[in-house]
Image 1 (tube, rainbow, N blue to C red):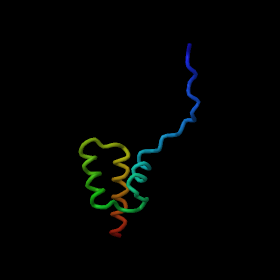
Image 2: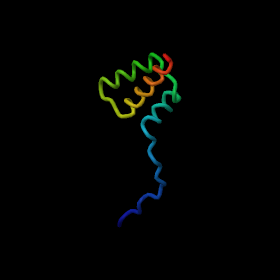
Image 3: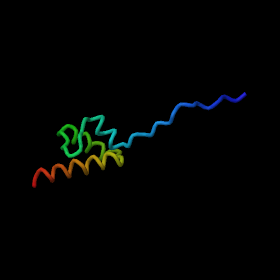
Image 4: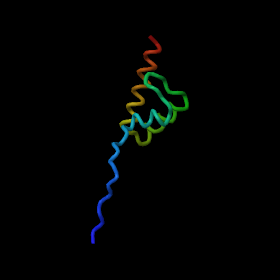
Length: 68
């Protein structure tokens, strides 16, 4: 006898960059704190994800904007 497949609704996965911002409370256009930046750099050195690089790019853009 076969079991009927679950009828739970499929929930789309949250994009990693959005998950990181939600997890760390980071809004678009704001710079990372020194501790957040250090943690990000450590991840980039070990096993970076596309979300890590996107977060790094966003932080870099915000830092450059602050200089102008």
